[in-house]
Structures are given as structure tokens and as C-alpha cells.
Amino acid sequence: MADVEPLRALRYDLRVVGSLAEVIAPPYDVIDPAQRERLAARSPFNVVAIDLPQGRDPYETAAEQLQEWRLTGAVVKDPEPALWALRQDYTGPGGDPLTRQGILCRVRVQDYGPGRIRPHERTHPGPKEDRLRLTRATRANLSPIFSLYSDPDLAAWRAIEPALSQAPEGEAVEDDGTQDRLWRIADPDAIAAVQTALADAELLIADGHHRYETARAYAEEVGGEGPHRYVLMCLVAMQDPGLTIFPTHRLVRGLDSGRQEALAEAIRRDFDISEVEQDQLAPPPGPGPLQLGYIDAHFRRCYRLRLRDQSIADRALHEHSGPYRQLDAGVLEALLLKGALGLSDEDIAHLEGFGYARDTDEALELIRRREYDAAFVLRPTPVAQVQAVAESGESMPPKSTYFFPKLPTGLLFNPLE
Image 1 (cartoon, rainbow, N blue to C red):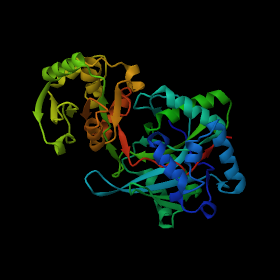
Image 2 (cartoon, helix red, strand yellow):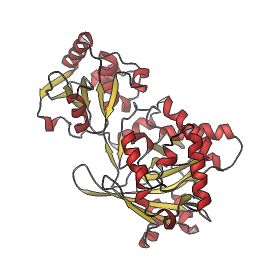
Image 3 (cartoon, one colour):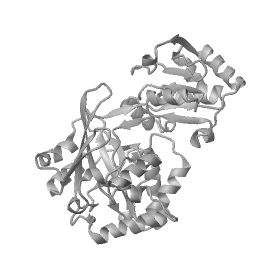
Image 4 (cartoon, rainbow, N blue to C red):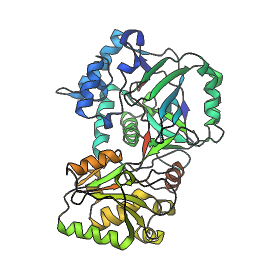
């Protein structure tokens, strides 16, 4: 079972740094250089200074900056352990207002396994080394890992919900309009009730696989017992009505005539093809065999591709579990990315002739600018399917899911010493 505990958080003193909105930032892996510059300009205390550090030795720079903030009182340590309640109000994909609710805590680092903590995606090697070097330097978790747990009655959240009648400790509106509100929960009875509700919970990492694997490596590197055996997490119930998953689309480049013909042949063989308008490129959510949108940079005509029969995916993925064989990202990878185009796991991991788009508009723009030769637009992956694949002991292809909204960095830090 997962070991969930309150933490003595490091956090910004808003009396010193100003508003929370000025100092938080999106997760490091979605920030481009221009956005980092804008965030750094908002405040000398913006978290990008330590989460995306610069300088001759950026990791040492991050450590020195965090230490300076602590010495000057910009960042303070809580006097006692607490849980933290996070509410995120945002606009859903259909335009409806939604609220997602999470509990910030520290969780003991364990090996992956049934009844404990499970991954759901394969990871890339580069980010793990970067995050490990940053952890060594700062001796803190700077951003929370986003994990899911099953709680049909929402008992864990209900245990802390009464405290939310008070004013939040901090609140911020992000650039995408998401409103974050944060409450500190120090009541021992509420903490005990949350721990009881989560006593048998298995945690499924939704976002932050690289950071979790970094935490495992760091814990073993330091050795012994201590705060370094824990990692900062935000826990969200799978049954939370505000839990939303977006798809991440796939793009390819470097298609010579031979690879273009191989791709066309595979599509004609395995898919029913219909031309659609651009606003219909994204396939609607729903069950059943793979459906995806397709556009290439030469003709720029939009198509809907429907897998003719699930048995095609079953044959191509016969070594995988049943849930995996129904996974859109896995079927696309097997039939077209690896099968027709010959991409390897290394190509995908290192983005060699391969890339991602966060939404349909970005995919279309990259095709229009001919930065890529073709785009595959996917359906969102249902939460139940994410859980089923993880429970089968398998990991999805990288970026099979995009949980929205992202958890901002800078709400809390978890000290590891």
C-alpha cells in the first residue's frame, strides 16, 4: 500500500514575495525559452529561477537561489506537518466550468508494483538525469507529482472539505484562466481520516514519471532513512468529476517517397478512410477500435481513419495485454509509426523524425509550416483505460495522456533534508 503522510512544507511567504500568481509557473517540461523569460520577468522570486535554472552551473545556481530565498524569508518552512487541499477551477474541453480537487502530501518512495505505486507511461532518459542533478543540488522536490487513486465515495476529500470554508492560504489565476486555491490542513483528526481512507490505495502516476524515478534514484543514492525517502505528490481521485484527459497528437518528418508509400499502403490496408472538414479532424471520444485524424504537408487534406477491425490490432500487438491492444496510442505506434514508418523506441524517445502537438491547432500549424510531414490526431484516453493498462503491468507509449489542467510548480516545496 502507498504510505501517505503530511509534510513540513517549504513555501513562499506571500507577505514577502507578493501574490502567488507572480511566483508559480507551469511544469518545467512545458515551458519554452520565451515563456521562461516572461515568467522570470514577473518576479525575482518566480519559481523558474530554481526549477529551470540558468548560468554556468545551473544546478548550483538553483541551490544558491533557494538558500538565499530561505535566508531572506521569501521561502519559509512550516512549523508542523500538514496536508494541503488544492482546488483548480477551469474551463473543460466542451466549454463547461469544471473543478478538480487534489490533496498535496508526501508519499514514501517505493518500487513500482501492485498495491503500491504504478506508472502508466514509458519515460525518456534525458529528463531523469536533469531532474536528479537538480534534486542533488537543491535537496528538495520543487514540483508535485500528479497521482490518481480510486475512491468511489470521495472519502479522503470529504475528510478535509470542512476546512475549505475558511479563506485559502493562497490563490492564483494562471495564464490559461485556471484558478488555483490552496488550503492548509493541520487538524490531526482530518489528517488521520485521510490516511485511513487511503490506507489500501494504489497510486497511479498520471504526470511526473521522470520526477518519481528521479526520487527513487535519489533515495537509493543517499541511503538510510530520512525525508529523502519521500516525494511530493498531489493525489486526485479517479472518480473526481473534474478529472479531464486531453490527447497528445503525433507528428512525423523525414518521409521520403518510399516511406510515404509504405505509410499509404498500411493505411489503405488496415483503415477505412473518409475525407472530413478541418474542424472535424479530431475524432470524437468514444469506445471501439482506433479512430484518428490524419493530414499531411503535401496535400493538406483532412481524413478520418477508422481501424477496420479490432483483430488487426490484436494481431499486431499479440504480445501485449488486452487493455493495451485497445489503446489508441499503442495501436497507432504498432501499425503505422513502427510498422509502416520503421520508427524505433529510440527514435520515439529521442524525437528523431518524430514529435508531439498538444492540440489540433498546434498540429495543423506545424504541418502548415512544413516542420513535419504528417500528423496523427488522437482521441483522449479514458481514465478507466489508463487504469486498466497499468493494472495489466504495462506502460503506455510516452505522452499517451495529457491531464488538464497541469499542476503548477511553486505551490509548495518538499524538503529532503
